[in-house]
Image 1: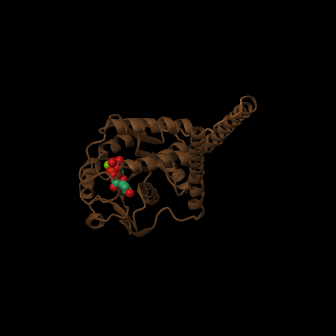
Image 2: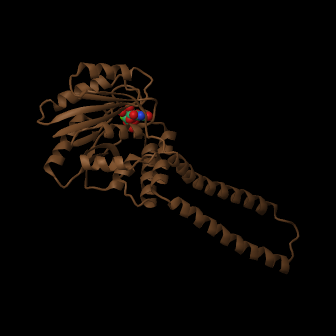
Length: 311
Ligand code: UDP
Ligand code: MG
């Protein structure tokens, strides 16, 4: 049996060596083989140099996939899975917020329970602001209502799965990737275990609030067409309301006669309908944009170099 640890790295120069050290300590006494697949996601710091040093030192089997630019964590995950040769594959961050010791437990669960194909960790306690936690809660309830793919709240990308799951994930060649949704979509029996994210070893988180909002929209639009249905319903409702109001105005005109034209009503209607139209066009645009991106059939990532311990 062999385990592959897939590690996306974006500006993690200060963490990669420490990460490898921890992995070696964690797995040296295990009966199975393991390899680390680092993906350098177009880092602008010394990540590449440090990964090269790690690769050349060969303290443990290391593969490094080097991107030609920053393609994002989702692309890095895809490239990592594609380059992993293990029977079990684990997704783990480079910053040691997710402890390699837990991967050992995940492997044990897979070994002992042939029924499970995926062991995923979810964050039991979050060390973040109440506002952010509340936003994430809203996101999960919205996405679970809008999509048919059930997302486990607070599940992270931190997970270990069997080869067949990896093959299924690689089959989904979509350009806009939302891993949590993809894993849920492919199915398989998943065991969820709680974990608490440790503090970041070094460096800063790459997620800003706006990046998270974009990520949330990505998740919803990527897994549901219900927003389009909502736009249709919204348009229908506005149409019905307009018809009712038309009758009211018509009767007013016939019975009492209208003396002064309703300035306030007009302005409110114009603004409201304008906003409603822009909103609906925006929803349609989200989907059209994705069709456009996907139709170009560009690759999910470009690797300019692959350092492979087997060569
Ligand atoms: N990451 C990446 N590409 C990016 C952004 C992040 O490969 O464009 C990696 C990053 O190096 C780390 C993991 O994804 O290993 C998680 O990122 P981060 O720690 O910034 O996120 P957080 O833990 O704060 O959610
Ligand atoms: Mg992190």
